[in-house]
Picture: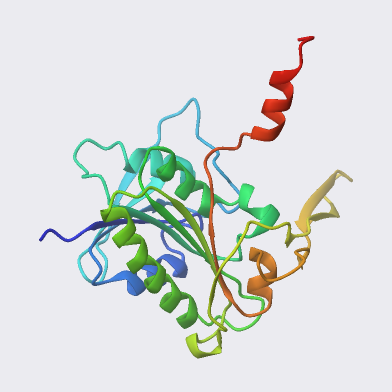
Length: 256
């Protein structure tokens, strides 16, 4: 039986520790190929490069000989290119991460980690985005354990023909310190964004993004609340952004 091909990517860049941890977590589950941005593109969402070519750079192989490539573009560029290269077989599963910082609630729409997974899912390739938050010590073992656990299930789902986009967020704790896995809804928590003024030379005002994580969900059935209370959260996301109830209401109006 042919081993499933698993394509790994991220938004923190190919040299980020999270993608090494991701590869380590998934080794043995299939044939791993890494195609990631050449540099950090956190917050890029689904942004694309327009008007200039995107350079693909071969990268040194991983510890188990997995092929690696760096793309000089955004996470969405990376995934679009990876899934359209004529000599690269289509993967069974795309896994994006492990991101340094939770991608829950309001921040999902900004996330390059989720953006890369979204691009894969939009062309029919099952995808999983994974994030961990390092407000304290950098403890990776819980994220690795839960990533492997979810990926094993995702591989079985993909092999059965199911299409999906999953968003996994894990506390920065050891596996036995995590309360378990919750299947959750997309909530309204997220990183509160503000700007801090910094005067540059000549008195020109510049503004740096600042802020902290805010829990706004009513209970742990939502992603932000669950991870803040020590659960690993798994949220199935949809590609369809249509407000169907409002669409029907608008369709019923006669004075258009």
